[in-house]
Amino acid sequence: MDIVKLCMEKGAANAQEIPLDKIVFQPELRDYCMQNRCGLYGKNYTCPPFIGDVNQLIFKLKTFKKAVIWQNIFPLEDSFDIEGMMYALQKHNAMTMEIARCIYSVLGRSCALVLAAGGCVLCEKCAVVTDEPCRFPEEALSSLEAYGINVSKIVEASGMKYINEQNTVTYFSGVFL
Image (cartoon, rainbow, N blue to C red):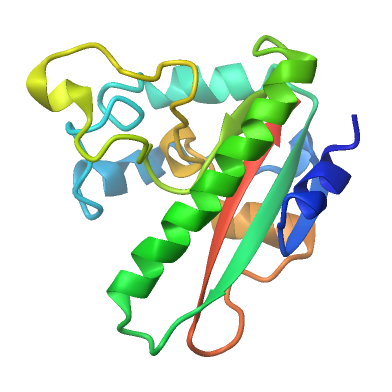
């Protein structure tokens, strides 16, 4: 399965394969999660603290051999267009979900792990808030950052740009194989 080709066919702006040794893991990135800058800490099953210990997650990722990272670049009205950023995030993660379904249907979940941008947004309100089990455990995706991945470094290793044109937002996802 050519995952780079799959990503491009599904609409990614760019996709690159990266050897695992080029991926920078930084467990201290979890500190940003604990500061709750995105508002999902403790409110989403795919985010800390529910996702698990960051060092165990990094250990799991290091069992894979390579990753494919893809990006999408979306236009914004201006650099303060939060509504546009959230819309772009939803579109990017919807595409990531579609890619994940294709990958998992061919390779299975034991041979691949798909990570998205930000926490899972399948449900308007995550079931964790009402102390219920996850409604979509087979589809929920965690973020690259929640797994301790320095996204700016992985983007650098891939040759893609982290920051693109003025008045755009760029989101990244990836699959570990």
